[in-house]
Length: 184
Length: 433
Image (cartoon, rainbow over all chains, first blue to last red):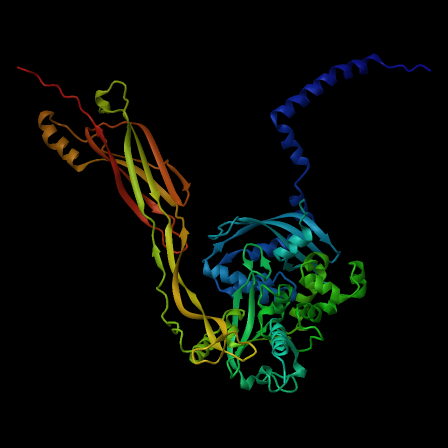
C-alpha cells in the first residue's frame, strides 16, 4: 500500500517545527514559562479558597482567633470567634482556649492581625473536615519563635443550615501525633 | 513476744505502701481517716467543713498546647481541711491530662486519692477509663490490637500508645460532651487528691499560703516567709544617639570658588537601643526541715524529740530580677546640614567688612532619603549624601531629627541631635603693597 503525502504541508511542518522549538527555548530561558504556566494553574490555596466554603469558613474563623488586641474587651473578641463556631466548639473555646490566649494577649499587650493561607485538606469525613493552614502574625509578640506557624483546624457542617463552622483548633500534640510524618 | 526482724519487716511493708497514693472510693471512706473530714458516709463533699481556697490555675507543660500561645492552663479547686490537709479537685479537663501524665502533673505525688464514680481503678489508667471509656467501643479496640480497655489505657499512661494518633475522635468527642454539659467541669467531682502538710510542696498549682501559714504555725522553727512584695517593674527607654561626619574631601571648598563644583560628602547615623522592661518575681527559698509526723512516716526526730519526717518547706521568698527587651524602630528621620550661628555671624560681620555685600547663600540643607533596619535589638538608620553644594564658608552642623515608633510598653519619642560638623573653606587673596 502506498501513502501519498502532499508536499506543501510537509514543507510547512519542516519550517514551523524549528521555529516553534526556538520560541519554546527562548520562552524557557527568559523565565516567562513560569509566569505563563501560573496563569493556567492557580495555586492549590487559591483554588481551594475559591472552591470550597469549608476552607473559607476555617480561614475566616482562624483569622478572627488570631486577630488580637489587648485594648479591646475580651468578650468582644470571644463573641466574634464564637459567631463562626459550632455551639460546642464555642463552649470548648471559651473553657479552654480563650483563657490561655487572653493571658498572653494581656500579659504581652498584644495587638496583631494575621494572614491565613489554606495549605491542604488533611482529613475528610464528609460533614467534618480538618484543614492544614499556615498562619502568619503581623505583629508577633516578644518571645515567639516564629511569626508563621502551621495550624490544623476542624470544621463541621451544621445539619440545619448547611453552613460550615469551626469546631476547634487542634492541639499541637494532637496535630503532631496525627499528621506529622515520622522521621527515621 | 514479737521479734525485732518481724517488727522491722512490718514497718518496711507499711512504708512501702505509703510510697504511692492510697486510692479510696468515695462510698468506702473511713470516717476516722483523713478523708472523713472531706466527704460524708454517702460520698458527698462536706463543703461546710472545708475552707474554700478558691480556684487556682497554673501553666503546666503537661497540658496540651495551642499554636502560637503554648500550654492551656491547668485548673483546680483547692480546699483546706481543719487539720491542715490540702484537698485538690481538678476540673474534668485538667484531670484528663493529669491522668495522661500522672508523674509530671503531681497526680502520683498525692498522699491519697478519692474517686467518685470512677470504678475500681483510681490510678491514672483507671481515671482515663472512667473519663474516656464510654467513647471507645470493643470493635475500635480490637482494630487497634487491644483485648481490653484496661490494656489500652495502661499503654497510654506508660507512653507505649499515643492517644492522639490512634484514637483521634475520642478526645474530640470528650471535649464536645464537656461543652454539652454531659460532663460537668466544675460542679461534679470525679477525683480528689489529698496532700498532707509535709507534702504541700507537691500540691498542683503550688502550696496554698493558708497551708503554709498553718505549717509554720505547727513548726515555728523556720523563719516565716516575709509578706513583702517585690519592687514595681521599671521601664528603661533605650538610648537614642546621633553621629555624623564629613566623608570627603579633606578640605571642601565653597562651590562658588570651585570650578568642579565638588561640594562635600557627609554621613549621618542614628541608633535607637531597645527599651528594657525590668520586673521582679517572687521565688520561694526552700529548706528541708524535720516536721512532726506519724510514727509510720518518721525518718527523723523533731526539735522536741517527737516523730518527724524530712520535708521541703518554703522558708522565705526572694525577688528574682527578670527583663524583657522591646526593640524600637525609627518612623521617620531627616538629616540636616545647618551653618553654625558663629559662622553666620562671621560671614555677616567680619567677612562683609572685607567683601561688602557678603550674604548667606544656602545655609541650610535637609534630606529624608535614608534607610534603617535592626542590628540585633538596636535600630540603625543611615543617610549618606554626596556632592553637597555648600556655598557658604564655615562650619555646618550635621543633625538628625525624627521620631521613634514606640514599643508596646512605651510611647513614641521625637529626637533632634547634632552628630558632627563639616568644615567649608574659602580661598582668600591678600594684595601686598
